[in-house]
Amino acid sequence: MRIKGDQMKVKYFGFFLLIFLVISCSNSANKSMAGKAMQDLSKQGGGAVRKINLSDQNVQAYIKAVKKLGETSPELLEKVQAQVPVDLTESSDLIVNSGFKDLEDFNKASLVISICMSVILSAENMDKIQSKTKQDYKDEFLEDIGDEDEFDKLFREKAEEQMEETLSELEEEGLIGQNTNSVATFTRLLKEKVGEDNTRLVLKYYDDLKNVWALKF
Image: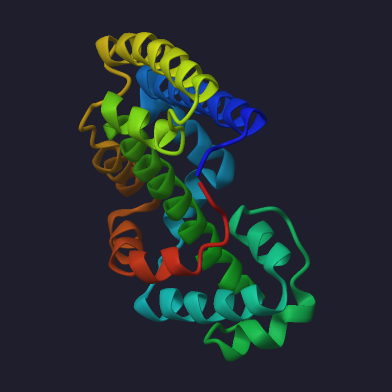
């Protein structure tokens, strides 16, 4: 199906917006992924986080609690997972019935889990972005642009030309087409910051936690 001219422009603009995000993300990583993560973790909990000891029961209760919170108030769940201060008094029964002793018990577990999930998801997303090749980007953004008429053909040729130039530069700088392992780097950092056992437990339940994670990266 042929795409209208204005739709093509939106798609074309979207390509360069994504490229901008790739550059921004990669530049932040190059400055020092570990250093930036350390700062972010410190802001969210500091040394107090290492004093919190998660258990299997904590994580399982957290998964149950946030599932219910997500059903009743998705916006509240996003704030909880982003560690935005919120009053959970009205959700106290829900949280306790999920397996926590009280709100304080939930808040402690939530702090550690939120830090770990935010860091791991960010690293996972960074690896995904940087692993895309030049051809991946081309295929993704040109797949719906045909050459049925002269306008389509000229637009496609211009887009391909500009993409080739921009993507080649990023490829030469090592910003795309790279098999990075930011997850491993950030996981080592988490073990230092929140403790090995806490990190291990979050990784153990990572798939289940990811399924109930409201914040998107």
